[in-house]
Structures are given as structure tokens and as C-alpha cells.
Image: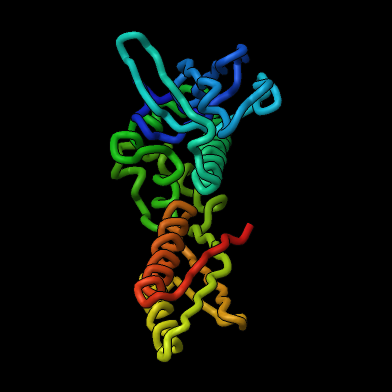
Length: 258
């Protein structure tokens, strides 16, 4: 029962899709969140030459795509598979899982209140989506802020049991990601250059942690409330460190941990 959004997605938006038809030079998909049809041209499936599209996509399977172009007048949505990064795939898959978790919470409350699930779901969504992009972020705020659902206009008879259910099932979020950062300097003051590079990385946020592993390699880890923020922190910190050593004719590289 994934919430269907109104209208069209934005260009560059990352969307979850289901493959519906595979043609010789194109793939048709259903955009799960919008209830619309999109097209992936063969050139946007994967880099390099493709002999058989069915080696890359399967009818009925989920794929995560990037929106390239929209023609609302004709109802056309052009999508890309190959332009989606691994980080974007992880973020989108996590976002969908979170929304499904939010739906399960609403279903639980609906059963306890002996209410129609779809009706209650739509009633709650109508209020939440006035201020939030989706349901789960609002539920995360409920964990931190008592009375939020009532502030959003949800009746007390629903807000109270829903708040209890949310607090039982959602804890304050925290994710941790990282990888290996390599920094090398051949300058006479190379040690100081490396130290400064590491400082620029750790100064990005108090939740950026760096440990020396030997041989010019450092383990860098970041913590954040969600993957999107964690990815941004990690990207900023590693780029600053690498840019810092590069300015002094050094070398830097980062490999993300899987």
C-alpha cells in the first residue's frame, strides 16, 4: 500500500520502479510511488554495448532509476538506470523500507481501533504530508516530540494510540558508515600536511571519527540520524582531506566499506 504521490516526479529525482515490459531498445517500468509509466532507453540501462536487455532487467523486478526528463503534456517520463550511484540506490531502498514500516504501524493502529486501514491511512497521510515529504520522517519526529501528531491536526483518538505504537516500534535513528582513507605526502613537512588534512576532515562534524591503521591508511567512520545525512558527511569529510593533500602535491584516495 505504498503511498501514491500526486503529479509527476521532479527531474533528477531517484524513484523506485517495477519493470513491466522489455522491448528490443527500451524498457517500460511502473513508477511505484506515482502510479505512472516511465521509459528507460537501452543507452540508459548500462554503460557499454548491450546485446540483450534481459541480461540486465527482468519483468516484475524492482529497479531504482533517476528521472532524466518529464513531458507532462504527453505524460512521458524518461528514466536512467546507469546514472544511479550505489549510494543513491541504498538511500532509496532504505527510504522505501521506512515507508513500508510506517504503513505497518498504521495498519496495527487501524486494527486496534477497528477502523478501515485505507481510510485511516489516507486521513493520517493528508495531515502529515502538509508538512513532511513522507510519513516515516514525521514518525521519527514523534519519537522526539510529544504531541506532534495533535499539532499536525490528527484527532486525539487516533494521535494517542498512534504515538504509542510509533514509540514502541521506532527508536531514535542512528546509522554508521565509513571506509578506508589513504593519504600520502612526499614533502619534507609531509607529517604536518597529513595532520592538517585529517583535521579538515574531522572538523566537518563531531560525529566524524578517524583512526590510523598504518601505512598511510586511515579508517574513517561517520554517524548520523539517517543514511542521507551520513553519506553527505562522509563525502564532505573525505573530499576535504583528499583536496588538502592534493594542494601540497600529495595523493589521496577513499574506498567505501561495503
